[in-house]
Amino acid sequence: MGIFKSLFKGLKKTRDVFSGLLASVFKGGYSREEFFEQLEYALISADVGVNASEQIVKKLKETVKEEKIKNSEYITERLKEIIIEFIDTKELVISYPAVIMIVGVNGTGKTTTIGKLAHYFTKQGKSVVIAAGDTFRAAASAQLEVWAKRANVRIISQGEGSDPAAVVYDAITSAKAKNTDVLLIDTAGRLHNKANLMEELKKINRIINREFPQSGKYNFLVIDATTGQNAIIQAKAFNEAVRLDGIILTKLDGTAKGGVVININTQDNMPVRFIGTGEKIDDLEPFDAKKFVDGIL
Image (cartoon, rainbow, N blue to C red; front, top):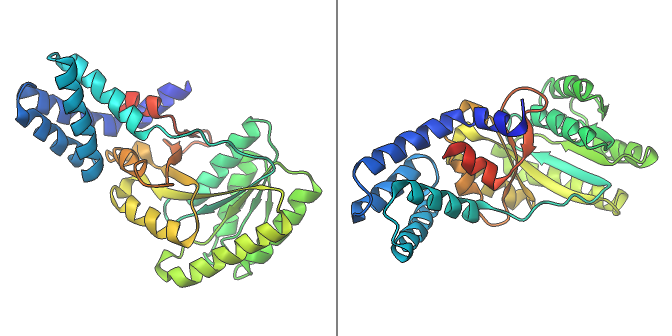
């Protein structure tokens, strides 16, 4: 299955919601003020978010007036163009060797995502090693080892309860010794104990900066798309704990709340970088605004 077909299939639930809402809006005609009010409500209902919905509809209203558009098909096309422009972000350029720290609460698909990322980078011809830095959750390392085997990459781990910074130190030592391109670091997801989490992440960052200063450093937050607007709350909380370089949104295939991508991409310094649309190891791809909008509208 091609990348776009896979994405299109993964966004089916979100697309069905958007299609139903827009069909309902267009039934009432599109030359009246109520049309734009109904459209705004429809976008909010699709988890786009209040502020984002207001801005998108305001821009569409101006465009329709300026261009004197009266055809629903053209209005839909303009809506797509506006959303694409609204959520399009500057492409992330990875500097190698790269150290990528993955953060997120438990249950978001963090372990699975690390395995998929490992596969993604190996497909690009990069060598990868994983640091099993979540030493708090029982069986976390064992689950990560399964994904490391699937991706055919090395993994550095220690026993449960070990110091995560010590695991990262060992992984950095190994990465440098073997000239590894990408080091993926798993971390614990104890958001409810934010003070400890912040200290743990700061300690890991100090180790990375001291032991691997020549590396490109990136922090990605894994968010479960099924949480809808709660994703924004998680993103803001983690951005306070550690400077985020972007979001990896998982489980888009299992939710009709894919509109949250639009809302997330309006947040400062928290663009969606990758999206997960299935359970297979290759069901992860870089976020592309045009492909995403074509997949939901």
